[in-house]
Image 1 (cartoon, rainbow, N blue to C red):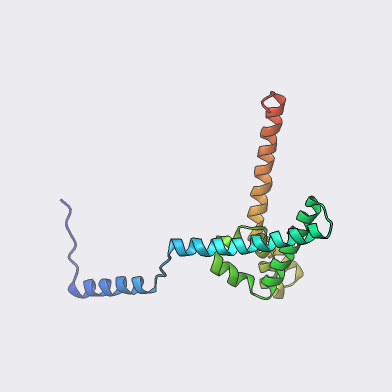
Image 2: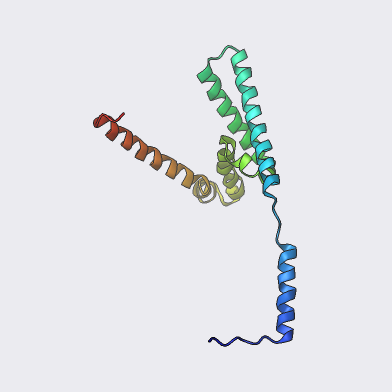
Length: 160
């Protein structure tokens, strides 16, 4: 049998006080509340995008050109809001609802530029611009290469 260590009453009291302090300062998160915030934030971004699509269509643009303009305008809005420190607050509120769409990707590229601009063009912006977005780009390109290779092999063997 293993020996149990005896803890002094003072140590036990300190441990209890510490555990209570940890409970007090640890933020509590409500999953339904966070999901609702993400849904509302992502939904708002989608509604804005849909509004841009409808506006472009009403101007006589075809579906593909309207989609391109929608993406460009959403990215521009995201970068401008990041510059005014509004998008990070939106992302803090909406979580994945703000970070998953194309606007979140634009924010992840613009934020390091703003943060590291004081270090100069090369060692600041040039070195840090893709700190967040770099892995996304890397794995996006790699996974599309793997899927393209699988598709090519499938075509060669008559699977697709």
